Every structure is written in structure tokens, then in C-alpha cells.
Amino acid sequence: MLVHVKAFVAGFVSTLLFHQGLLQLLYVGGAFPRAAWSLAPVPPLGVPAVISLAFWGGLWGVVLWLIVRKHVGARRWGWAALWGALLPSAVALFLVMPVKGMQVAGGFDPKLIVGALLLNAVWGLGVVLLMRLTGHR
Image (cartoon, rainbow, N blue to C red; front, top):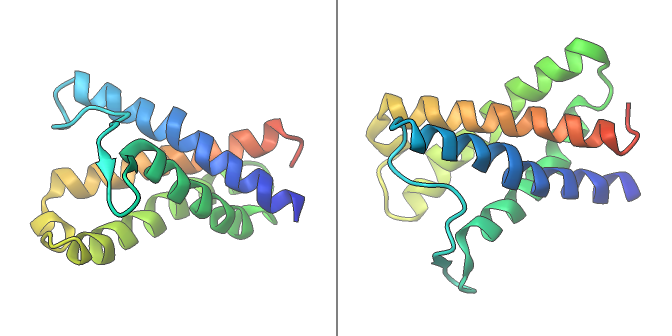
């Protein structure tokens, strides 16, 4: 059970550091239209968007850790980048966006899709790094 809590915290923190850090770099470089660490309230609870995102990142961190934990070395890092990119991105693009009244995958905007995959791959690597720093090798 403790490993699941650590994976949640790793996913939460990875969202704040790695996912949002890269998002800010992409924004500053003109490759993404919005800045990171948004404090805009998100319904239904009105929590800041970045906290809502980090919460979901924590839940995804548990899922990701369950997938990659049995792999070691470069294989773990590769699976973390791959599944980190694919799973949360697919859910966001094909489920969350339509539920929120947006076009599926943003109308299949390549910039949005590549951005999501890149941000979530970096997030996945961050989860593995943080789990490693907590002693889970």
C-alpha cells in the first residue's frame, strides 16, 4: 500500500515539476499557446487547474507504476516514456475533451497531439525518477 502512496505522490510531483516545467518551456518558446501552472478555478470544486491536473497525475502515477515496476534499467525508462505518453494522452484527447464539449483530440490538431504525447512522456519519466529517488529500483 505504501508503494501506491509513493506512486501517487510521484505522479503528483512529476506533474508539477516535469509536465508543467516542459509546458512552460514550450510556452516561452512560442510552441504552446498557454502558460503552465494555471491557477484558474476548475469546476466542480473550484480548485486551481494545476492542482486538479496534479491530482489526476497522481492517480495516473499509480497506474504507470503498476505497469513499469517489474521492468529494470533502460526498459523501465522506455516503458515509462511510452505508456506515460500514450495512456493519459489518449484519455485526455478521446474522452475528457469530448466530455468537456471540445472536439475529439482538438480536431486532430497535430500540434496538440504531439504536445500531449511529449508532455506526458516527460511526466512518465519524472514518475520513474521520483520513484527511484524514494528507493524503488
